[in-house]
Length: 370
Ligand code: HEM
Image 1 (tube, rainbow, N blue to C red):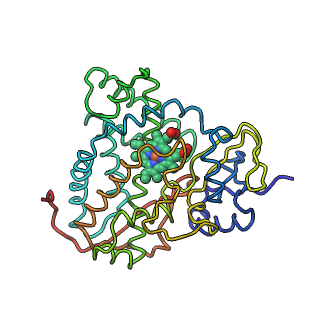
Image 2: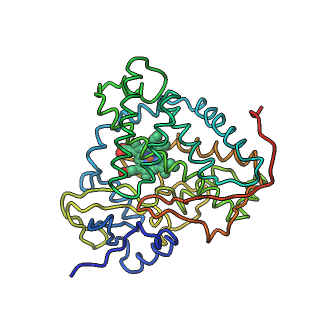
Image 3: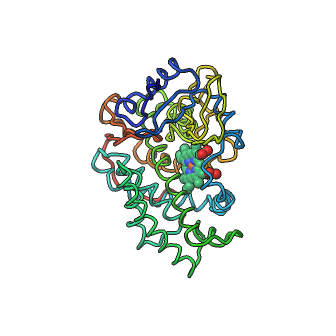
């Protein structure tokens, strides 16, 4: 007899994932049967120790082989990024966006701030010339929001077409950007390989970054103590971000692994060739290992083991600077609706609000900080 498998991409799950994870843990323990998509069975890991074992054992739990050969290129691309320039890029991107809504007294911080800011900053890092940015941003957004495989395939094709154009531009005139680093990499990738790498970088990087920004704002809007401590200077933005990475990380379920042989984890038999997904949120909040979450970096939000996020410093800087600029300009931001009414997008992988409506006292446009 088949097991009843929970589907993570459902409105009920998105409305209250904490309860859904608790329910799965109570019913199944540290590993639970789920359905990744219609008719695609998978295992969701809810136990922190079990997740560490899986992520630290690439021999028995390999990641998708398509991403494997690019690791050193990703690391080289990130190492070349000038963090000082990155901070000023975030600041220059933040100001006009904030000035676009600061006089109105209300905004949707996802559509009006976190998402465009992330797209502008990543486009700059990657090396898009201004004429390709709008097209690339629109295609990436369509890709992130695609509701079915046909829409997602079309958006990916459009995105790859813009990327191919970008690679051609940078082969002719390289600059100080991610594409030029990938073109100059010792492995001498061809154009299709570089387009593959860029697609993976953008798909892996964009949405979690804008969700980290808004999820931190939601935590601060919800927890007035947190907000007040932050404003009073007794808490750092870094702590607020770490707290979100622990309790409600933007990549809630991630790190798919594909055992080639049956494996036993927590007395459960995981079948060969069936994906194993780590529930980062459930593992971080595993009662078997719970502790103080503020300033504690033992969370799994960036993954663990050989595939740990290569862009962790970059994403952290973007989120911190974006929040710093916004809270500096508009310190009295409040959610415009009760937290329980905040709409969340159903997603297997992302913890993603559909909108973050806020209010604040209207203010005059901001200028560059001294
Ligand atoms: C808040 C933002 C981010 C979060 C929470 C995040 C999280 C993660 C996690 C959990 C993994 C591990 C995947 C696995 O083990 O299979 C990962 C890998 C990866 N991330 Fe990030 N990431 C973020 C931002 C970014 C950004 C900005 C980029 C690039 C611009 C990026 C590029 C990648 C790539 C290429 C990998 C795959 C590495 C590999 O397979 O070796 N990420 N990320």
